Amino acid sequence: MSAFKLAAAQYDIGFFSAWEDFANKLTNWVAEATQQGAELLVFPEYGSMELASLFGEEVCSDLQRQIHAMQTLLPKWLDLHAALAKCHNVMILASSFPTLQGGNCFVNRANLFGPEGVIDFQDKLMMTRFENEQWHISSGDQIKVIDTDLGRLGIHICYDSEFPMIARQQVAAGADLLLVPSCTDTQAGFHRVRIGCQARALENQCYVVQSPTIGNASWSEAVDVNMGRASVYTPVDYGFPDNGILVQGGNADAGWVFATLDLAEIASIRQHGQVFNHRDWPKQFALRGPM
Image 1 (cartoon, rainbow, N blue to C red):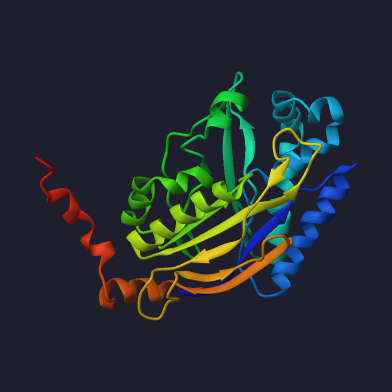
Image 2: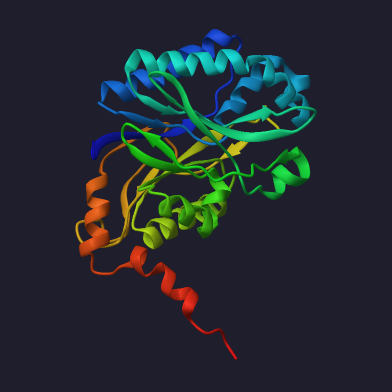
């Protein structure tokens, strides 16, 4: 399959009094996307932090207590996503979840689900200052490419998108689509990720999809302010938008942004484009440096 419909979430952080409230929210989001024909659903970085609202004010106000408490919900959270992917026969990139790896080591993990369950996961590789200095989230150490029924893809969790060699290794391994769940609390942060995404789409002549958290959650020490726009970025070449933005959401409204992607167009533009960024990438390493 080369062409399919994708849905990128512009996702608001909720507050829940019971697990069932969250389950209903997620179920409704997935149902809405699939009713529009989406076959791949992309949720943002740290959207899972809304689950901390279930543990009360003392936990919500403490970064470490939040992520420890959330581990008790991880099995149910995984099962719910797996059930929804199976029910609707779709793939779901779930919101990234701080995941305990033993001892007191947490990673920021994005799980990709299909109708048969978890397909694979990607741990965040490059950590922000907040994650390093305040939250003490550890980095992953493996760049993955994931084979799916829709094609081969890579996942960049927010800050990862700002480092070109991560994407290049995925594209060199056959990925034509990069998924970027993000969580940023300023317009500058959103635009840093957006610029990174567009640069990766330009360099590699591939699709890049960004899904952000949005809105305010004053109760949360982790995701209190959220800014961004769900967007799909493309090569800047024949047949693609002049600004490299296929679709984008508004500034404030929660909801899905839909796009139909044709991965055959990626192969075509790399062969017949106005420029050959993908093909010419190795040439830069043969150039002599400044004297």
